[in-house]
Image (cartoon, rainbow, N blue to C red; front, side, top):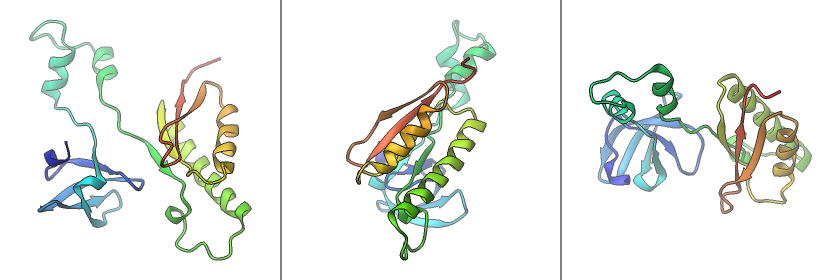
Length: 174
């Protein structure tokens, strides 16, 4: 799968948040322009290809009969979803920890999570990943409390080694 990466492919990063587009390939090194316009070099093992499918493949996979145009409700239910993910490790949020207390760190991480959660809800994303780390479990517990207060939202363990969870949301729940 990794060897199939080509210039122009959209990718996310295995060990950090964000995504980008492959701009250049030298051996197994890939120059990726991220969503902010910055170029960085990555190894193939550090990149996760985002699912891409052509219109032709999409229509072929959902048409009931050959040559029939799909109905809108079928078309949109089959469109591949992009992965939404936030990594709350402190080094991703600030340049220097300085002399921040544990309370200040968790408060900062929760503030970033709440901003991300608002964007997710505005976009009506049904599933996303939050990387909270393994640590003492305080941040994960605080996030679970926030998720519990959202009608139709649930949180599940995802990647134990990275300390990640999946949050699923259902909208229009009364």
